[in-house]
Length: 307
Image 1 (cartoon, helix red, strand yellow):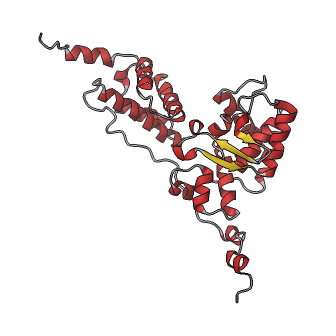
Image 2: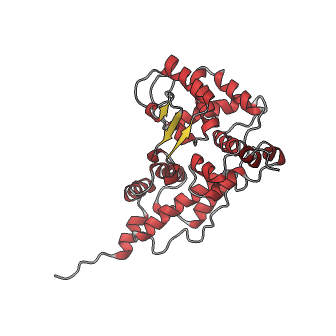
Image 3: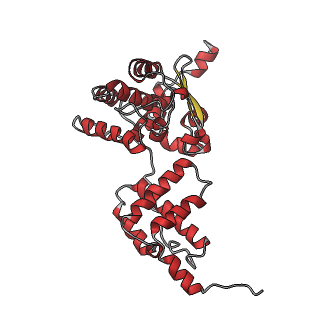
């Protein structure tokens, strides 16, 4: 029997007319190797793109550049969105839907770069007070104190289980499936104030039923955007006080404070769950003279009076 062939132009036209939503579903099934957090990020971007365009034929450099220009004020978001759209176009090209990658000429936007800005020492108490003054104060206070002291990513906070936190021994675990990279799986010592805030929330409000650590006002697990909405409300309250709150700045504040207290970069990398020490250095930047003045005098502490 001869080899059956298909009319290439007809197949190509049919496949280019495939709705983006169907293509994205196939892309999602094919990328079983992606980490759950990465896949969620990709799908969030691709669904935003489908609000503007309907078929795979619309996945062009011109359309993508126009889309990236519309989110250019959010530099990290623009960069991540470009990566997700490139992944979809590379998948479609490999599948034979495009003869050549349509996004090959699209330049990857530059990320924010530079040192992230931690909260000032004066801002931290104001943030904790604003969280405690909410309608579910003990829960929100526990989230904020934990985020500030343990330097967790927002998604890591959201996905904590009650069993990930050991208040008796004073540590928490970040599981591999809930973090950004393989290096993100880690154990973190809990600050005494975080232990106190969590103890109040768990024992007086949440209870000890297994499941997600933080529950919504109906006592059921948060959806991701419901969890982030709590931070949005906190942002609005603090803006009235002149504080620009961001959940990601909580993480940077925690990392910076570890550095200020004398934690060295290799241990800091492990506590933060960074894959590369270069990433850690981007967070902490160069220490100021006032930061350096807080470091312990290692030589004298170890050797005593040696001179």
